Length: 352
Length: 74
View 1 (tube, rainbow over the protein chains, first blue to last red):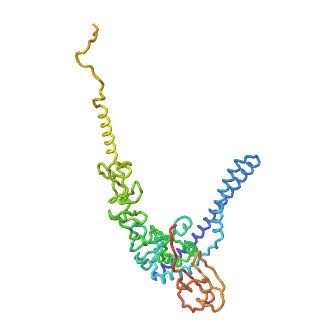
View 2: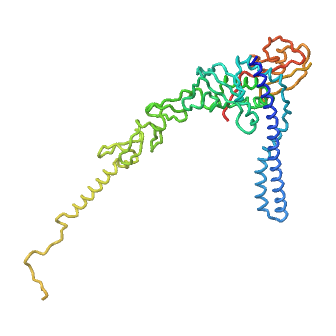
View 3: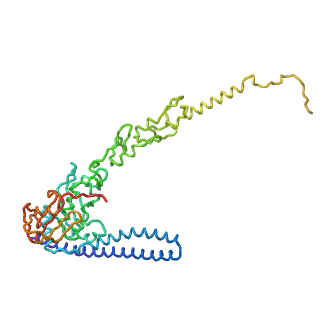
């Protein structure tokens, strides 16, 4: 009996909330009308300036205004379409109390249990355990916040999807389902139908549609794809990363995270830290195919640090020094030494 | 005769429509959801599941909701 009375109270609370929602929609329509009216006035103002510019022969100015008008017209058509969609929509007929009560009973029949909290003003259902592509995601609670229904047009959806036995994606703990992030579901194909169901007070349809979104996997647009749900383990440090944060070393053919991978500075191939070689001359990481040995000292360097003669800088300098030395030696041989006057020969005048 | 028809597919639809007498729910689905499979939809009449040969009556409330609705990131 108490449960029956509480359900009646809940139905009353919902009826008030639907009434507020209807008013919120009209206010939202008023805001859209205002935005549309403002855009119209902008276009009218620009057209007046344009006429003046053309009449006075200010054709450069007229061209600029024409560009601005063209830009505004794009916004204008968007605003117009939004306003038209809203004004085209059917008048919301508030459901009667008996219809709301019947809806609550249907929710219980479909989901096995209807949980509600009159103080917090929430209504919840719990889905069956969801499994997609052999990945168990557990059951979810779909919780509707009755007070937030009137904010349908200005903020997030007035319900949350809460994982009760979470098995989130390895790369993002907030993603508990491919289409749920931070307890908000991405309604996708169901977006408009869900909105209409809330407006018309068909809460069982709302819960059913959300539950069906959770049971359906759309591989084209998930927050995290099921194939990456467990993530990819870096071969070096073991850190789990998302597929697009992963780097493949073409040398050892393993996957690495960004911290454990690099790329060859010469050929730009992706390589892991283990397969990269740091050139001792320039300190740049290179792959094994971009290294070469100096023909003189046999040191392994990157190809950029080996010259055309196959020498490293040090050996090249050494060779040049050696050549200079040889040259100097050649220039100091005896037949080239000029004649020096012998001792005690000849006299010379020494001033006082 | 007149029934309330609620279709939660696509952009949603909920209104009264006229249908011929002695139309079964099976026939109604085939007319309204051409090319679609009944097994892909949840069909309720007056909020209850009904057999395929259920004959619709004046004032019935028929709801059709797709079982597969693809979510997406925005």
